[in-house]
Length: 99
Image (tube, rainbow, N blue to C red):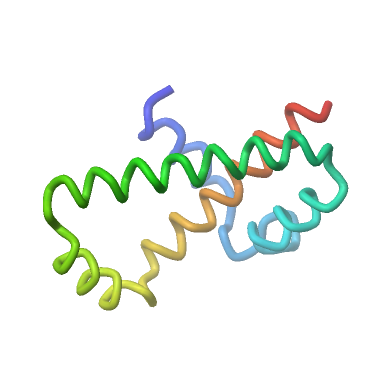
């Protein structure tokens, strides 16, 4: 499934109000009650993607540039939306495996 299609699926949700909760609070609620092996596997996938992204940036020698960009975008709506999407994806992956 393409990233564009995945993003379109999430446009139907108001990211600040996912079933009356934030995506983050939904994730933490699900993570507490779901099968812990599934939760751990999904978290490991997220960390592995982060590690790959970091290595790719390091290989391109973007460390200093990256640190400046991170400092500039800590409070950024696009980053907030992307973070919420990560939590939504985690909830979906966990819930579908626990069914």
